[in-house]
Every structure is written in structure tokens, then in C-alpha cells.
Length: 617
Image: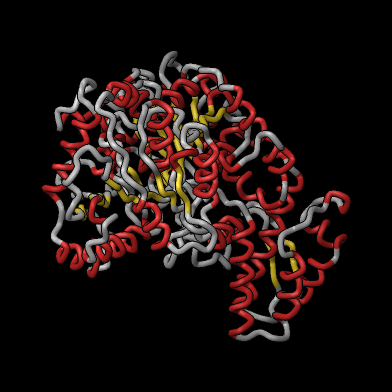
């Protein structure tokens, strides 16, 4: 069993004497929950593979809660599972997560707020800490006994520690050999932890970042990725020489759990596709809601999940007429339109059955799994999950399903995912998109009006069952790169080298300083039109870049020499910084015309900056 919590120093000292045990430190972004699940699966896989021997140590450097949502229960479950296997578990909270925000109105990425948080990180211990940063003045500087799992009373209230302090504490007890041979760092978008690990001397080969945002890069034209708009993405991706495990759309199997749904329905590799489709459409029909119940559910404002069946959907079981919907905040808009059309007995909508995915949409069955087994058409946002699964099935099975892709507005990664699906040979003929200025209702009508395919009676589910049973997963790939030194593919090596160039780019670093000046300056200007403004590039800095007034800051932004000195780049290397002249004018005007209209104009410029910069969200 793990040692008593009071024996932390003894545990670390004892670790030096071991030969096979490992110390694994993990961190991830809290945004959306996907990064959490993906990373924890790798650790669970390591347990299954006996990669973490008894008496190994796992330190979770977990991010703070995302948008006030409590931590996912799977963290507690995995921590308990590790402890039951004789592994020592420490739980801590990080201070500089890659933190995404959503726009309440559109459901899209609030890139302006993302920029502001990253630019504000140097203020997190200062008197002018902005409200969007949590109060972490209670942080600890050492790994205390309170970090042991046995002493954690609430998974949502963990001891807070800087990543640099975490490694400094470890170096007090661990010798060089242990540090270089048996410490591993695993992240899913946590640049701060990787940076601190690199500075502390953890070998690059023992560090891995699992990531999917590299889809936003152009590996064929590396210079494009060094433009100022990529300054924040460079930070998100890391590039501190760690290995990467890139999640490309459809490369590996993420659908293993679909097999359990197939088993529940007694669908096997020998089952015909038409047989599976018939079973599933009958199941959906049995769960279809009366139209008045659909209207009532939509009236509640909650995200709709359930089945809406057209009156003629059972007329011809040989047609592929199931449509699944997994479209975030657009789901209810789609459901309203579907309800209206079916109520009018529209000829196209009435022959379809619409599956709005979500908990209990089809009783205890997983709605997406049913859709995949039935080779159903889909309507989804452009998230890496559903888009990757769509791509994987089209790469590895003879499926004919179509997909209407609705990328979330302003979401860089989702736009890149849509572009990828629209150009890849396996998927491009099956992808539908909104045309420029096309309304959602019109796109739905066009999509649904397409004649359903007749299901080929000669085809079985053999290829699909084989594909979802494949052991080639992103989880095993990341595990094997980190713990078994699986070589990176040529594509991954190109991305890794590009991320390192981005991390070392003088232009991108200067651009981040420029953004700190602009966004910290806006925070100061929002509260006072005449006061002095201090800009901090780092929480460790002892002296700020100081301006006597907003006017003085605006003058500096206009002057090449002064600005190059402020952001520490030569005049000859000075890039074309986003909205530089508009921002300079804003600060100069703020000294004279500070009012509600001015504050609104400042917000507009901030959001324009968010639109320009590639944040990764």
C-alpha cells in the first residue's frame, strides 16, 4: 500500500534507490473536458500494460475548474484505481492552464477572452489581478503532505502550486540519475508544465504532449506559421523539444466502445448492413417522441435529445433514412425546423427519422453508436471527436454516410477540421457545408431533400466490426511514444520541428509582448482614462514597462523605435502587428474621450484582435 502522507520526503528519497519505478507528472487543459478524458485514458492504459510498477508515483497537476464546472469524476476514479494498485498519487492544481472560453450567444470560441487571460497571466499575483483570473494567493511552494490522495477531502479543492515550484521541490530530493532516467511528463495542451520540466532537466524523450491543434499549421510552408497571428498558437502547442502525439482526424480507432452497443443488439460481423439498419430504425421508432412532447421539450430551453420520426420513415426499410444530429447550440434550432417540417407532412422530412444525440435519447443505448452501426447520415459541428470518427469510418469501411458540417463560429480548429474533411480523398464526396450567406434552414432543406440511398444487400458489417475492434488507438500511440520510445512518423517529426521553430521565433515572442501591452493596457484604461499604466511580461519580473498615461502608451505604439525597444525586437525584424494603428489611436483617444461609447469601441477592437489571432480554439 502507498506510504503514509507524512512520509513524502522519505518517499522521494526512497525513489532514488529504486530501479524500475517511475514518477509520472501529468497536466492538461480543462477546456471542454475532451483533453481531460484523452489524457486520463493514457494513464489507465499504462496501468493495463503494467508500465507503472508498484510504488511508482503519479503527480496530477490538474487545471482549475473550467467555467465553474466541477472536475470530472473520472479523475477521482483513476486516482483511486492507481492507489489500489500500490501507486502513490499526489493531486495538485496548476496556475497557468490553456483556458478556452465560449461565447454565450453563439456557442463559438470567445477568442478575445482567451487572449486576455493569456496576456493577464503575469498579473496573477499582483494587486491589479483582473477578475477573470482566480485568486491563487494561497498557493503552496512545495509538495506538501496535503497533496497525497489520502489527504484530499474534495477533488475540487486541490493544493495550488506553480509548475516551476513543483519541479524545484522534486530536485531537492531526487538525484540526477533518477531525474534523467525515471521521470516522465505527459500533457494534453499544458505548455507551462512542459516548459518547467524542460528547464528542470527532464529529457525531451521522457516528455510527451498529446495534441490535435497542430491541424492549424501548414507544414508545407513553414514561414506561414511564423506570422504574428500564430503567436498564441505557438504557446499552446509548446515546442520545448518534447515528443508529440498528434491526433489527426481518422488516423486511429476511437470507436472501441461501439462494439458493446453492437453486442447489445446482437449485431455481428456477419450481420448485413440492411439487417443492422432495420434493427436500429425499429429501435428508434419505438423511442420516437410524440410531436407535442417534442414541442414541449424544446419550449423548456434545455438542449434537446430524443427521436423525431417522420410519418413515412418506416415505409421502405431498404433506404438509408436515419439522420443523427450532434450540433451543440444549433441542435435545438435544427429540432425546431425538423418539427415544423414534419408537422406540415413535408415529403422529404416525413420519410426520415431524426436522432438528436444526448443522454437517454434512445433509453440506455448510446445514440452515436447506433448512428454509426446504421451508417446514418449526420449533422454535426466540426469537433475533432465526431469528425474524426466520421473520417475513420470512411477510411476503413465501405460506409456511404453523408455529413452536413456546421463549424462553430470563430472556432479556428473546427474550420480547419472542415477544410480537412472537404479535401481528404476518403471523405470529400460525402461532406456538405453551408454556402456563403446561406441560412441554416435552407441548408437543412437541401440536405434532407437528397434522395436516400438504397442499402446494398450484399454488404455485411465485417469491415466495420474489424475497424472498431482495432487496437491501433491514439491512446496506445501516445503511451508507446512516451514509455516505449516508439519513433515519431515523418509527419509528426515535421510538426514537432515546426512547433520548436515557432517556440523560438523572435517575431512570435515579440507579438505576445505586444498583446500583453495592448490587453493589460485596455484593462487599465477601462478603469481610468488618465492614470499611469504598468505592463508586466512575467510574474517573476521585478520592473514593469511603465507609461505615465494612456496617451504616452499610444505614442509608443506609433513609434517603431520605441515599440521595438518595448517588445525587445530589432526594428528590421519588426512584424506587421495586428491592429497596431487602431490600438495606438484608441489609447491616445482614451485620454480625451473616455465614455461609454469609447469603452464599447475598445471592446470591438479587442474582439477584432481575437478574430485575427489563431488561438487553437
